[in-house]
Image (cartoon, rainbow, N blue to C red; front, side, top):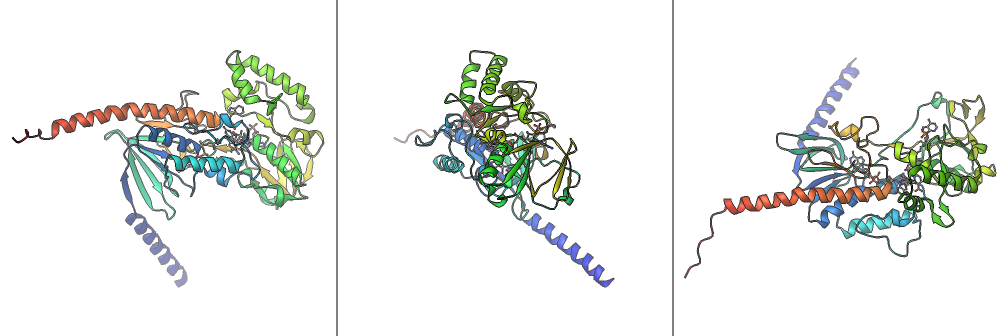
Length: 432
Ligand SMILES: Cc1cc2nc3c(=O)[nH]c(=O)nc-3n(C[C@H](O)[C@H](O)[C@H](O)COP(=O)(O)OP(=O)(O)OC[C@H]3O[C@@H](n4cnc5c(N)ncnc54)[C@H](O)[C@@H]3O)c2cc1C
Ligand SMILES: NC(=O)C1=CN([C@@H]2O[C@H](COP(=O)(O)OP(=O)(O)OC[C@H]3O[C@@H](n4cnc5c(N)ncnc54)[C@H](OP(=O)(O)O)[C@@H]3O)[C@@H](O)[C@H]2O)C=CC1
Ligand SMILES: O=C(O)C(=O)Cc1c[nH]c2ccccc12
């Protein structure tokens, strides 16, 4: 009994101490210019565009480095899957000796050079937990927690959301997860197939991550199986040496999307055959139409399909439930597996911290207005890199945001000059 009392007393004391610590460290900082949430490629591009126009900004980043998605949550053999000209950030090209599809290390070196060139110094380990607009003073109040839960409130006129479409992992729930017994990981913590040599691995999800992880597993002599729940478009990364993405953009200048989709599907059929014969059905809508309607990115094949054709990667139906070291599929088949890798994608986290309901959809945390208009909200709120158009889309957003802020920045500077000119005493006439 005494022990319980002592425990309760200690709990109250700890609670009091923690509260005091948090209270004593609470700070409020006024930021001239914009606060940017997220130091990924989008946040960096926005800050660079503002800097170029002489507008100050402060980037708040929850991780301890820039581009944390690329640095901490991607596998070793990752390369950009679009050619470099579609992935460089605005205002600074890739070095000319970069290959067409830069490696993850090259892309990170470029991003570090970018931050250095524009002298961007994000505040790291600073997680934004809420942001609200106060209409009485016309300012944003951005609350953050540091590593020791210390609270800081940043106050600013412009708020730029750059937290990405991949802010949180999506991990579906299945009956029997606790029974499985083997490793279960998300692709964000997968580095290479080394740990899975000789193992039977089930990869759940057939987006670009799932497809590329399967290929990597093959290269390490693991035996991957791939869950294709519904359907997916697989396109060649290049058509006769020309990037499929580049070719599509060019064709879209001349032809309607449906026709370009027909072309892409025809060429894919010629190059791959009918993917349905390997258990991979194509969606009802064409690849570009589906991308623009739902944001679902087609898979750009870098060799996975060949491994499916040779049987090195097996295709499975959706999962019904997990069992001890085994998985039951909806077609009734039960198969043994040593490990499961969820390649089930990511989601935005904006609605969890932004106290504003107009600009972002509750459903997916992305701007309600479709591309190219999703970058601007109300009351000085902006978003960059959330229009499902990859790095190219982020650069476009960053440019528009900086141009927009520049208008009010200039207007205010003129206002301020006029105000100081009136408020200051007149200059005394020169002495003879
Ligand atoms: C494996 C992979 C490969 C890709 N390859 C390509 C490609 O080849 N070409 C292409 O165009 N696109 C590609 N993409 C799309 C991808 O969205 C972009 O590459 C890019 O990373 C997007 O940049 P971003 O800054 O918008 O988001 P992110 O890179 O995700 O950066 C967002 C940052 O915000 C931070 N953050 C999130 N929440 C908070 C918070 N509450 N407080 C503070 N900070 C926060 C995160 O820690 C992160 O550092 C790829 C994506 C993945 C996952
Ligand atoms: N080399 C590169 O440049 C690479 C780029 N990327 C990019 O990164 C982003 C994220 O890609 P990725 O991680 O693949 O995520 P995606 O969201 O693109 O794909 C997730 C996949 O998981 C499937 N899925 C979701 N839930 C389940 C479930 N319960 N059972 C079975 N399958 C499920 C989805 O199917 P459905 O849609 O039917 O629900 C979808 O096929 C994309 O933009 C992608 O293009 C990724 C890897 C490499
Ligand atoms: O979102 C991604 O993963 C990208 O790489 C960018 C992208 C934008 N539109 C596309 C259409 C086809 C393939 C990739 C993209």
